[in-house]
Length: 426
Ligand code: FBP
Image (tube, rainbow, N blue to C red):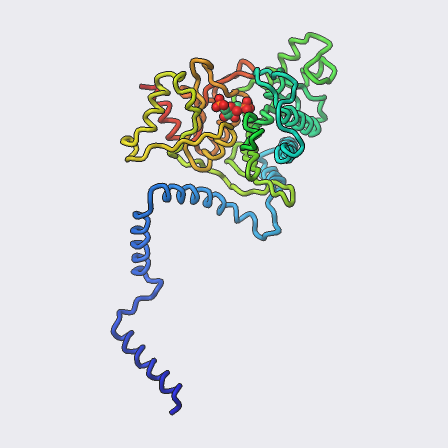
């Protein structure tokens, strides 16, 4: 009998003895699963807390993205912002005019992303030389450019009635529109103090329905740059201001665009929060984050602690408590502060935690503007399961009295904002 045959028979015999000896355990059996689970638990326990934390954050983002994969069936089937808007229209969630306004804003963000990306090359850094804006801040070149881009895109959409910008002293009434009178408030370039250093910046926007008919504005004046009227200036400007000064709870749409290592637009139309990343190859915002949910807790705080000495006692006590390891099982909160609201908020939305800009001895109401910074961001936070508070009240309930009014802002994970508020309740 050939050698090969003999050795196969030998192996078979040996195999039979082995399996006769060992209990037969199928690899998919519950026992193996338990063993695997036990091994994973042991390994997990050995992992330092930070590693577990990073894993948890990555898992949170992956979960959001996993939900998105269902949309992008094949690599050439791009689920873009336009596709998503069409779908939301089909569902009756928004009308075509509002979709047009959102598309015009996404066009503005693409242009600003390009300008920001080339700012160093096309000498778009530095101050504009146009002096200070209504906030008393020296305008940067890109502040002015971004503002022009936003105004042009909104005007061209033919769907906006009044627009209010951080860079404009008064609301701007857009030429008599053929239809759709949406009110758009925006900060064309947020965090501009970071722009020359190439650090993340962003644009923030909110869309309202007119609270009084825009027609009543137009009935009385020639369309022009600002609310110039041939009749009573105050009345028309007042009408503009009334239209933009609406409480955040009236918002129909809110969003921001982050200009950073990748450019991401995050948006809500009042039914969850979605993230779209700009694909530089096709120049389209592609859905990458489906129904973002901010984690309920997050041990990351984002405050400019340089103002600590000027904060009031409750805020100081709150900040001290975050840094007390004994209070948090030996590991205090981590500090992260980019100094641009859009960047700090975006991280907070995905990883959890809290971004805060409290009032202080110098600025009683803090630094951030209610209309085009705090309200849109609070609407997004609430739509993602988080909170937006002044520390004492819900930001979305505040009735604005001025276009550039400032309010303190605490925003992010529900439990973290509630914890801050608790220091004002004691
Ligand atoms: P603008 O750049 O639009 O004026 O926004 C204000 C802002 O830059 C926020 O983006 C940022 O969170 C905050 O001010 C930073 O303020 P500070 O330098 O006082 O920490």
